[in-house]
Length: 163
Image (cartoon, rainbow, N blue to C red):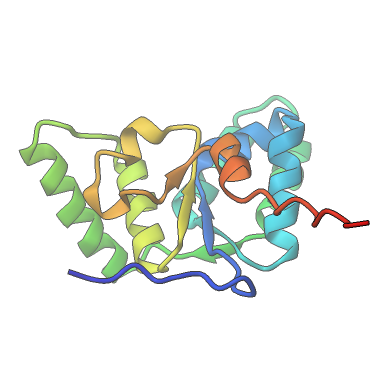
C-alpha cells in the first residue's frame, strides 16, 4: 500500500478542477472565482483537457459563442492542462471497468478527469459532483467541494498577543 504524502507548510497542494468548478466561475459564484484565482496565482491549479472540451462545447453552443469562447479560453488558459493521452486512456479504462463491474458506472468524461487527477498526482480533485468521484477508491479523501476546500485549508488564526 502506498503511503500518503505529507504536506509541509511551504508545499502547495496540487488541485485538479472538475468541469463543474469552471461552470460555477462562469455563473459568477464569487467564492469559487476567488478560490480559482488563489489556485491559479500559486501555479497549483490543473484541469483535464476533457473539461476544457466540455467547457468549450458549451461556449460554442451559445448564441453569443464568439464572446463566450473568448471568455472561456481566457479562464481555461490560467490552468495547467492535463492531456488525455495513452496512459490516461489506459487508467480510465481500468477505472471504468471497476465501476461497471461494481454496478456503479459514471459518465466517461468524469472517469477521464479522475484518471487525469491520479496520473498528475494531484492532492485534491475539486468538484461540485462528489457523488460520482467518490465511487473510486483511488480518490478516497481527495474529492472536495469548494466549501470543503475552504474549511480544510483555512489559515490558522493569528497568534494572541500576551500582555
